[in-house]
Amino acid sequence: MFNGQSFDIFPNLHDALCWIRAHNSCDLYWIDAISINQADDIERSMQVGIMDRIYKKATRVDIWLGSVTDEHHPAEVSRLVRTMAENTQRNFSFDQENSFFDDDALSRYGLLHVPDDVWYAFVAFFERKWFNRVWVVQEVALSRDACILWGNDVIPWETVAYCSDFLYESRLYEQLSEVLYDNNPTIKDVKIGSNSSGIVAIQRCRHGILDMWDSTTLDHIVGPFACTGGSSITKTAGALLFLMLRLTVGVEATDPRDQVFGLLGILNLLLHLSGRTRTELEANYRKHCTPVSIYTDTAVFIMEECKNLALLTAVPDDSVKNIQALPSWVPDFSANGPSAFLAMRWPAEIPYFDACRSMPTKYRVVDDGQLHVKAFCVGTVSLVGEVYSELATNGSFTQWADFLLQCDPVYEPTGQCRVEAFWRTLIGDRDGFTHPAPGSLQKAFHSWIADHVVWEVYCAMKKGADIEERISRLDSIKRLAASDVSQTVPSCDVIMGYLKQLKECEEQEQVEGLFDRFKHTCQVYVNLAFETLWERRPFLTDSGHMGLGGQSVQEGDGIWVVTGCPSPLVLRELPGSSISRPFGYRLIGEAYAHGIMHGEAVGEGMLWEDVCIQ
Image 1 (cartoon, one colour):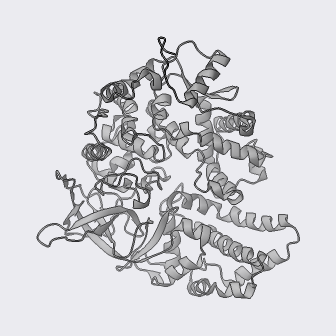
Image 2 (cartoon, rainbow, N blue to C red; image 1 turned 120 degrees about the vertical axis):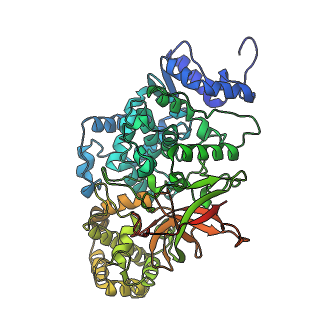
Image 3 (cartoon, rainbow, N blue to C red; image 1 turned 60 degrees about the horizontal axis):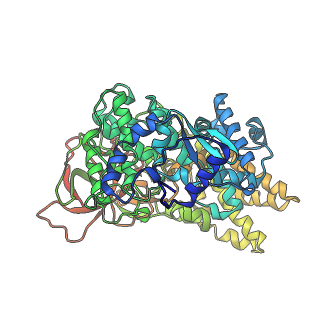
């Protein structure tokens, strides 16, 4: 009841208010669902415009994740969160060459003998809707003090932030996702703690340490095209906004416009900290301000501020877009797909991709949503491989072997054999320390393929399949191994040797031990591939370039280098293009093309075409 009248609220808010009353948490709260008239677009716009001031003045922000029962193991989950936070505060160093979580590692981190149902509850903690809301960025980044209300516990946000650091730095979130999926395929798409990692990074940017998110720094976004030096906090408003949009990929908003509006408060705080005026972008919920117009205006703002076209690499794959009416060059900020290459871990102090060889950008946007750029075509896609997620769940490495057998034995752009070019392509040719990637990863790739192939045959054997018949299906792997001068692809003799060991195993623990040895050896490669490969497919062009693109890439698409853009782009010609005007294209997404990521394809006197992206 408010002022003697009934007031409808959602059940989740009702539960939160009951918890607050039962625990005597606080006497006075500001609650947006009550304090803002959500039905009045003008009031809503005005209130959102000052929410940064509201949160900054609040004594504390209490975060309600939802009701908890014994099935959620609240006490055990709290212990895990605090234990991981303590690991971060102890400044553990994580060895990327030996990052598989065996009993020794789990014991060292205080995580040994955690029951599976507690791990599932821990996953569910980070999968609560609050972690997937765009507005949480302001709630934690602008507050003086934030706490999570969880069961009978109150967990400081900073503790959750340190826990998120541990999940990310140790790569435990990747391995938990993989191991738990093996036990329960219904959680296929879980990436534990990944959203909270982005939130944590933005929270800390108020202190001027934006590069806490590993090497996804503002310098990568601004690039060599407009980098003027100085601390991260002095970069342009457009670069700051672009970084935050990349860090919040996967968070959700009921209103798609809030993917942008929900970040303006922290953006204005950053501008204030550096002595600059508030951004010209403002929340506007009037009906004529559609998601298409808001996203397009935001894209133009970012390009103008950054003075390059790095924004184009953030265009998600068609398969995950939510707003179909957008111009193809405008990122759908509401899409939850694979992160752009820009968001992968990048070695510190190593220059990022520069496919256009730092050619200054030349572009113009016309009123009907067309983007005119200067570009040249490296080649046309002539062959596509299987999307990794499909291969890993339902396919076989023989599909990639078939792909590689259609490539030239020597990859001409780099002089490497085709297998080496391939394993480097799948990880963006980098690890956490160097670029190009070290040759030592060849062994890890070998173990990864062996793990895939042996597991596939072993599962068939368990179902009663004839081993000789299954081995005969590996003919393409056998032929690829025979022609592999690097001896990376496991031969049939090697595979048979592993299968013989499995047949001699009398206990299931021995079987698991063999596959654990595979994982020990290949985990460093898997960790890298986890960031670049999921929902992407390899491709080959008619010019002989091997690359990696989104799952919507198809034969006939062009691979283009664009001035001012760090990565090549996949463009698809639109029907009805006229010879008398620039060809019209649709932007499919960014691409990694091995051997040309640092301007090797840009020669002296290069003729750049005028290309229209619609």
